[in-house]
Image 1: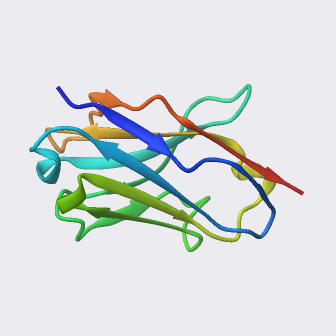
Image 2: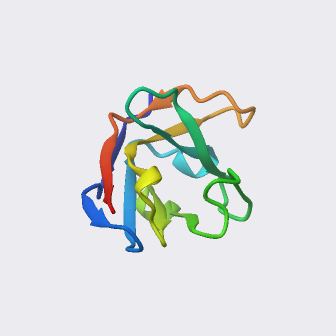
Length: 119
């Protein structure tokens, strides 16, 4: 069982930056691929990006590519989402998720953290 807790969400102006954190429980964190997702009001959950267990491989949705960066510190059991050049359309609840089998199946989810970008 893995527990995930996101933090760092807040209100920020357009063009600003924000870093979200995802703290994970358990000693097997380093083996899990991890992902970030978001859900805006009235919209379906959207994939944001993904990072391999080692942190050596990342993949991003086109909507955030070049603006968002995912990283992880396995010694701290924590994953990060650095968000730059934020836009109002980035407003959403952001969730982190764990993919233990590294097959694109996210079995564990955090509770989410709200990011609001004002224009």
